[in-house]
Image 1 (cartoon, chains in turn brown, purple):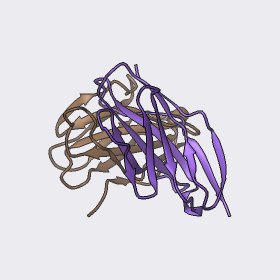
Image 2 (cartoon, one colour):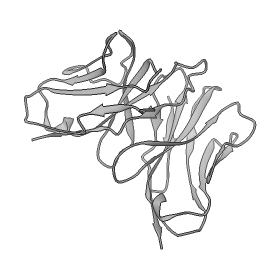
Image 3 (cartoon, chains in turn brown, orange):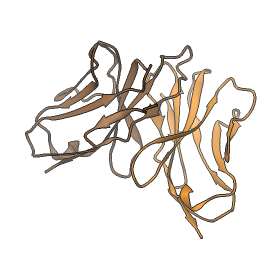
Length: 117
Length: 114
């Protein structure tokens, strides 16, 4: 009965290093979404993936950010050459399907707090 | 483009009182979903309640109900008989208009006082 699992819970990186954030969706869910939350802000959509496919990456920064959801294993959000502005909470959400009317409920993980020194 | 507006940055409410958190939305798509999430100080996002644009009745989940007024494009969250554990950030969000992601408001920080 596990929910969406994200790890690590907290991640500290120095400027220029790489950050890898992992997300395992709920059992039976094959759709994964990544969101970013800056301090005092709501969540902002980054990317939507199904197994082995990126469906919508309209919210992803053009450089240094990438995401994958392989056939086996968790979804990974990778940030290369991190900068202080990347410091934020990164949330993963999953759903069992896309939903006919795109109104499928999303269930979120507990987030990864990335701090860039 | 979709937009969610939450006009109350913070609210203080006495324990056991009912609370209404405001949310208005903007979309040109006739098919959409509206969501409320709770984010306690521990940081996780907890799903509370969902309302579909074609649903005839207002959604209810335990002490949570959604006052959906489609013509006014509002989707206020009502918490009955508030408890100390309700203190948290509350986010209104919507999904539709062909977008895959949720669009979130800036949130309301609710503090329940004993």
